[in-house]
Length: 176
Image (cartoon, rainbow, N blue to C red; front, top):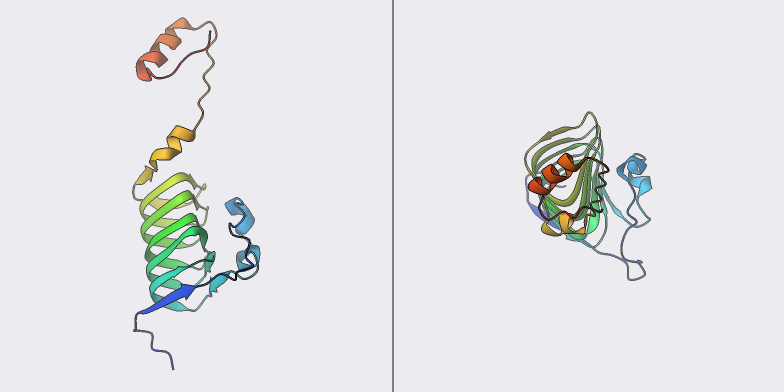
C-alpha cells in the first residue's frame, strides 16, 4: 500500500522516437485537459497527491496536488483547473488554470488563465494573465525578452511629443 507521507522522486522519460519540442499553442486551446497534450505525455490525475521532486523529458499535465520541485526545462507544465501545486517550477512554458504557489521560472511563456490562482514570484521571457485570474507576487522578465521585442513608433506632426519620447527613451530612433 502507498504511504502518503513519504517523499519520492519521479523521473519521466521520453521515448527515443519522440520528435522533441512540443507545439506551442495558446493556453485557451488547452482547456480540453490531458487530451490536448500529444500522445505519450504525463499526467498527475485528480485525486492524486505527489510530494517530492519531478524531473524528466515530457510535458506534464497536473490535475492533482504536487508539493516539492518540478524541473522540466525543455517542456511544458499545465496545471489544470483542479490542480494545486506548491513547488519550485522550472520549465519552458507554464500554463496555470488551477492554483500555484512557490516559485515559477520559465524560459518561454507563463500563461495564467482566467481560472488561475498564482501566489508566487514568476521569472519568464513572456507572461499573460487572463481576465479574472488572481496573481500575487512579482514578475521578472528574462534579460533576453526585451531585447527581442521590436518597437515601432510613428509620430506625425507632433514635434513636442517626439521630444518628450526622446527624453523618456533616448535609445529610440524616430523616423522622419
